[in-house]
Image 1 (cartoon, rainbow, N blue to C red):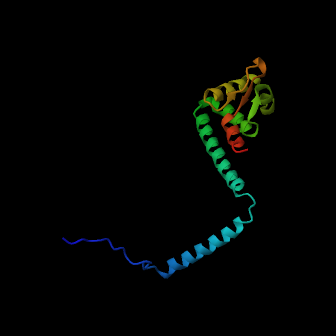
Image 2 (cartoon, rainbow, N blue to C red):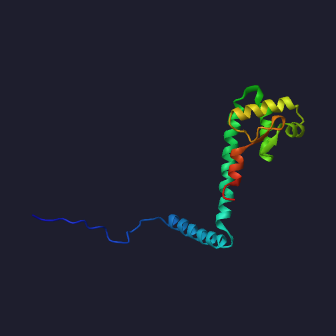
Length: 146
């Protein structure tokens, strides 16, 4: 009875590449050296990267919320104005928001109610007339790792 063993190909393997591919790989290697050199000048790489991660998360949240608002029919126009305000002021009360948007209290109250029903806004207190609402997911993204 004869035994057979596995014999791998000799290392390193012979790569059959065209000159254009070799030049592209050389350029990529040079670009990596430049990137490595530049990245060493960044004092806190985690902070630098987290800024872009946060920006991407906020962008995805915006797109998801706008898709929900677009499905509101006639109420979408007011909801979009309120939403644009929310992205600049993620904690609001209806009175000040109505004043800032130059809309009536009842119109803003209706828009807030619809955004609350859709889970975009969350009421943060139960104080009768001066209820405060927060764009909680937005705040959570901004507060993460801070």
